Structures are given as C-alpha cells and as structure tokens.
Amino acid sequence: MSLPARLGRYAVRRRIGSGGFATVWLAYDEQLDSPVAIKVLADNWTEDSHVRRRFVEEGRYLRKVDSPYVVGVHDAGELEDGRPYLVMTYADQGTLADRLALGPLAADQGIGIIRQVGLGLSALHRRAILHRDVKPQNVLFRTDDSASETEVRAMLGDLGLGKSLDVSSRLTMIAGTPSYTAPEQARGAALDARADQYSLGALTYLVLTGRPPYEHATLASAGDPPPVPPMGTPQTPYPRMFEEVVARALAPDRDDRWPDIATFLEALTAAADGEPVPTGPARPLLDPQLTAVGVRPTPQPVSPTANLAGGSGSPSRRGRWGAALVGALLVGVAALGTVLFLRGQDPVVTVKDAQGSITLVVPRSWESSVADDGWRPPGQSTSFPAVQVGSAEEGPGVFAGLMPGAALPDLMPGHPECGNEEPAVKGGGGVRATTVWHTECPGVIVERVVRVTDNRWLWVQVRTDDRATANEVLDGVELHGMS
Image (cartoon, rainbow, N blue to C red; front, side, top):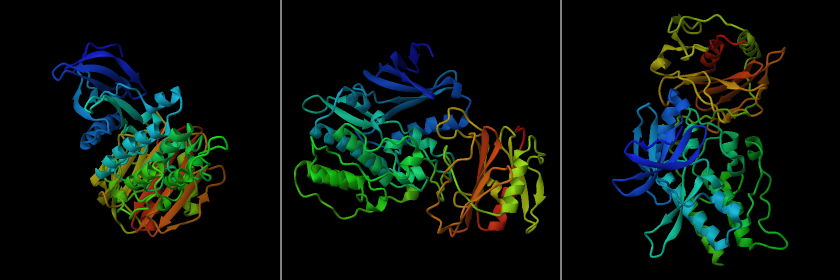
C-alpha cells in the first residue's frame, strides 16, 4: 500500500510498520491536535469475513478497557475500498524488544516496567479479557507528559492473538509465543488469568536477567517446561527472594502460582525493597469461562495447532470414516437435505461449508447456529475450509476444519472440564487417523484428526449428550474435491 494522503479524517505522516494482516500508519488528528496510530486491515484480507471480524473485534475489546497501561482505541472506520481501520494511541517510544536490544535494564527500571504491564493486564482481567500473548514486542512505550516531569509509560498492545483464539463460540485455540506461553495454554487447556501471570513472570525474568527463562522452539516443548533456571550466575547472583517470587509466577501448575497478578506485583515490590515477601490472602480468581476474548466459550474445548495428538473410539467406525475421507472425491449429500438417524429416527440436516469442501450431517435441532465461512489455523496466513454447527452456546455441536500438514499432529486438545479421557486409538492399514473420547464432561466430547491428502488433514470436534449421536455425526462427515 502506497502512502495515502489521508485515512478518514486523519492526515497520514508515515508508515510505522506492517505485517501479514495489517499496516500501521502514523497520522495526525487535526481536530484534536494529536498524533495517532492507525491500523488498517491488509487489502488481501478484505473479503475474508473471519479475519475482518477479528480485526474489528480487537478495537471493541480494547475500547472496553480504560487504563493508561493498555493501548487505547479512539475511533474506528472504513475506507472507501471497504477495509476497516482502528485509530489507536500512538506509542512514540518503541517497544520493550527495542529497549532490550540496546542493552540490559537496571533492576528498578525493569520492575517499574513490569508493574505497569501488570496493571494493564489487571485492567484487562477486570473486563474479563485475557491477553494470551504477553511478550516484549507487545509492550509499547509512550511519552507521558501528565506527570510533573516527562516520563515514559509502558502499555500493553496487540490483542490480535487473543481474538484469533476465538475461532468460534466453543473453540479455544492453542497459540502463543512459546518462550512466554503458559504450559496449560500450550497444551490447549481451558485458561484463566493465571496464564497471563505466567507470561508476565517470563517477562519479569527477561527484564531482570537479559534472557528469557526458556528458549522453547515449539508450543509442544512449552507444554512441559523443565524447572525454572536460576536467575543469577556465580558472577552476578540474585537475591533468593527475587528467585522465589519469579519462580512461583512460572510454576508449571497454575494452582501453585500467585493468586493473581496484583499479589505477584506486591511480592515483587517487597523483594525489591528487601521486605518480607507477602503471600497475601488468595483473591478470588476470575471465572475461566469469562476470561476468554470474544464470545463466552461454553464449554471450553481447545483447538489444534501444528501439534495435536492421541484419541480413542470405535476402530471400525474410525477406519470406515478415515478410508472414506482419503478418497479423491466423495459422494455428497444435497445441502440442507433432510434424512433420518437410524438410531432414533431423529430428523437431521446436511450442512456444507461455504466452499462446499466439507459436509456434515447433524440433528436438525443443532442447525440454529451455523458458521460456514472457514477459519485460519494458528500460524497460517490463509484461510481453510471449515464449518461449525451448534444448537446453542451451552449445547451440543460440531466443528470440522481442514489444516495444512504432511503428518498427523502429536498433541490433541485437552478437556480439563471432563472427568475422563480414554486412551488414544490410531488408525492403521494406511489410513492415518487419531481419535480420543472425553467423558464425564457432562456428556461426551470426541476429537478426531484424519490425514486426507499428502499435505492436508481434517480436524473434527463433536460435543453431545451421548456417544451414539457423536459416532453418527462422525460417520456423516464427508469431504469433496480432495485429491
């Protein structure tokens, strides 16, 4: 995109940066006599309704939070070509990553930054929003002229990942930056505010030592971290109180972390002042159901990344379904045609995704909510065919989506809300499929992944009240045009 003269009513000065999904421009609000940053959706994503919806929602979520430590959204609009844009606070002093590239920070300076970032996270959590991608690149600095002396203030920005996790009202994506991602997030568990606390702990370790606690190459390794390495070295030891405070924030089991970010910040400040570290009364944690960005996910499953794994189910059903999927072209059923489930003569309908690649046969009662416009798997810059059908926010439903990959993933989504996970069953005879059943949820959840071509596999998640219905939905999945 060439330099535009104006974006809406804002005079454009220069481009600040660009990525796969958006370009950010420095502009000037002539009415309010103030510089602003304008984030514009990339033109190649204008027609992708899923990406467009996430982009607009980022502005809505940021707008909900009134904190000097969170990047603000002041306006929104749409260009003549249909692309949406967000007018945001201009961070004129770069990012924490930029600062750290210049050299290490003094301990008091680093703790001050962490405190401000923590206050920003607490503000998000009070509005029932998780950030889920706290890292140096997402900590921005802005000149603060409101103090008696000009200061630089840290702010949290970029909730884009948080919304990319909201693939649908019932799917929570596994995603994040491995070295700063909480183990439960890397494993695909349901999340609460303690996931952001872990990321803040990793950021604290970084600003105090100049290095992250871990150099995870993948989310799979982040899901099972080794013990936290010592912050100090023989040459530059760290006080034991600091080590203990940060290590607790980085506990692999979230139940072992600080009750909340405010308590963590209190303990960190006390350690810096050489005072006894307060354990503090446990503040009530946010409802995990309420801390997801976007529509409240109910119940909270997780969705795949480049690493999904293990499952269980009926081998005969699995083999029959998998073999059918591997076929070059499967016989489809008329869209929205009515048939009957043999199990109970329940009326069902056939639903396809917008591209006609995936067909689902589901109970008619589920059809009240259908999303068929595809999805963007984590780490991918393009959308893939997908369809989701559900009866209601709290009710049964199914999601089926294609993903790129030459081999089946190694890690399947977990479901901590379920009381039992059955052993994985993997398909044989040349059909590569993995199925896992979760029971005592209430109801059942079944996850299945099937390799359908040399570079594509299909992920299906079904939630329902009984195993028979789940099996019938699985057996009704068909692909079209795959070779």
